[in-house]
Length: 125
Image (cartoon, rainbow, N blue to C red; front, side, top):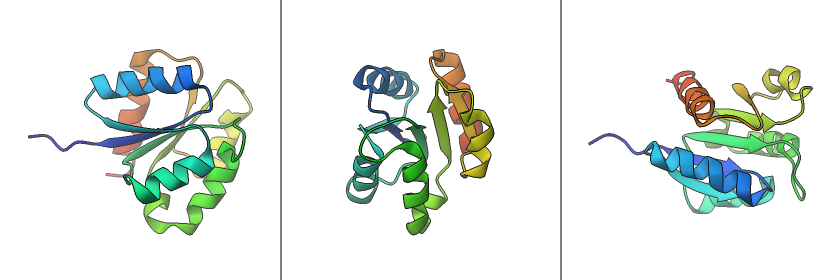
């Protein structure tokens, strides 16, 4: 039996979060969700350590940039590949500087989502 991979989807837009989760679940991922970075840290500590993180940038409470800084305090989470998700073109240049392995422009197709997640996973294997 294949190993179940866990994905953490962090986005304040519930519809976007649900759509991404559905695509990943249909591809065989166990998906946990959070509406902001603060909740995501709690989920990762208390529920499941993800194999990949999909992170929106613009969110209330704790945004994507703040999450990227906060995760540095947790060595296990630092090793997890992060895919930034944004509709902002400026994020493209910032992604590598903050430790993200990829940027996924929103909106994106299911194929783009799955290809980007596969590349992110391959980057740490």
